[in-house]
Image (cartoon, rainbow, N blue to C red):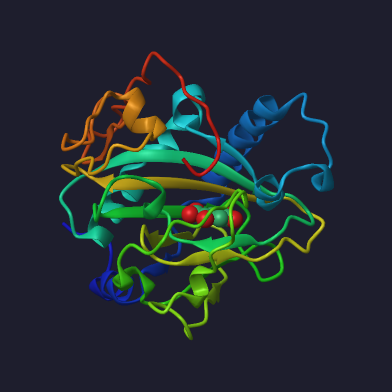
Length: 277
Ligand SMILES: O=C(O)CCC(=O)C(=O)O
């Protein structure tokens, strides 16, 4: 039986993003928020840099990836059956795998997250990909809310944006495929999940508040997707997946369907690189 209303699925298909409210309770958010905070604190301890001392990419957010592998307390969130089922229904596929999860904490004063498409960072062709962007405190304008260019996922793969700013900038919003379409800023009450398609052009506004913008995201890929190109990509190299092979294995586990309560074991080798890889 379906979890989401047909109308929600249709809006996602049309716009490439949608908000689903009431996916997580306050208690769950308190519990997971504490565990994610602790993981971020542990992984960043020793980093005494102020925001202005950081590079451009890190001024957009503190990024801590693949928490499901190291944080037992976060694992049930990443393998939430409701979230996995919703991801599969929005993509219109039977099964989804975890591509990655991450905490994205935008510091007070943190800069814009530059507009980009996620899927272009990876050699996965047109494989259906979707992100669950979970604002642990809800999301309001002025505090790093996300904004999406409606329908841009239907423009296909555009050029990858260099979020590290190490090459000539490419303004994806000026790309003829999407030019003239304004990103729509999305607010979401606590408990919501904001979903976007892997090809939706999106950005996040600066965090003008005094509080950390605490977000956790889970990126799902359709089961059965194959690697299309050979360029180095950490999750695929680690899993030993060659061009043309199916994207699967212990480090890329199924999120839906699964048996309730059956959480996967993390792979032996823990990888923690950050950045848009
Ligand atoms: O949270 C942000 O600032 C950016 C998030 C993002 O780009 C993503 O989830 O794909």
